[in-house]
Length: 293
Image (tube, rainbow, N blue to C red; front, side, top):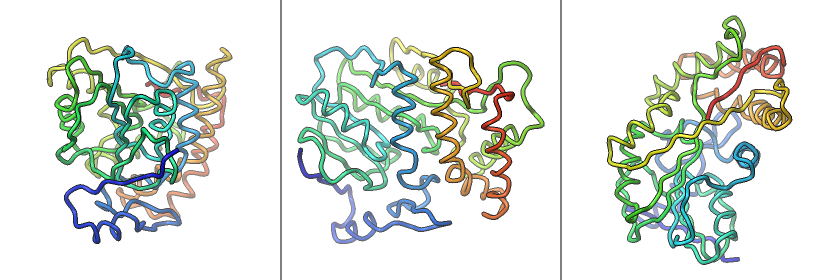
């Protein structure tokens, strides 16, 4: 294992030590200080559970793109805690893996072929190397201009390289009539409205394929997966996914909501009181809701 090293882009090193390693505290949670406010969710919450959820949803596959064995450089954008990048680096020790994020919340010791850089994916990319594979997941809350990020990924790929995005699709969907009178339905409406007001709409994922084709990506493939919001589904594999997503929401829904719904003028106390009712709906097996991916 190697000691983690950070690269600082276009900022004074002494200033970087302060602005990057300091956190902003709000409502009992910490947020990135570098480019404060660019990402509305707090640091590091649910990331390990999220990793397991994706792993189970994708039938224990770390990636889905047909990248083959001739891979030398891999980039993981918005890497978060770095769990995906570290696992990939461990699986393929001959591959150099770079993870970028606004927050330095990755482990101190990482595989020797893995490094992390503090960077905003919406800034200009200045990597020396070209990448054979670029990976990003759970990006729907991250960017004001996702198409610009896709264009930068296109330019950073080597000839024949792959970009893979793994993202939930909002609004949530229902088997049968939508539960329009439920607090869960209202929560989704509020989050979509708040995310638009913040300039980072949660509804951009359905545009990824069209944007990629417009940019110049070839052979764009869209795979569809389904994650029940609790174990209401009858099939065993969907029950397992549903149990994981339910836990993910139960742990993370407050963090997902405070800034997003707060942008609509709600106080933290009002949001927390509302979420008590939303959590009950998330656990209600009669609400047959699912999150497409």
